[in-house]
Length: 126
Image (tube, rainbow, N blue to C red; front, top):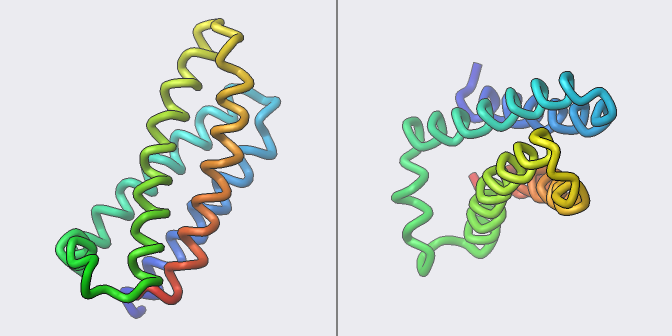
């Protein structure tokens, strides 16, 4: 199997897993396990991409990269930063701090949208 196809399949599965986790958000323990798995897998996917393509070096050449690659990198980095915000607010909600629930919800939908955009732009950024 082609490396690029293997990475795209993983990306699709991660995005799908995130969507299933959102769908099951009312079942807290299942939601937490699914979303945690998807986030860890996505970060591992980034490491795979770095090791197979030298993505960081490529992304650091923003002045010579295509616009779509720069957009893709910006969305992908934003997604990872949002993951950390999701973990932080999610842990607050779990610990009973209800005031974080609405922020976690908004961040969740934003994170999912950014992850979908990361997937879409990945087809043109390669």
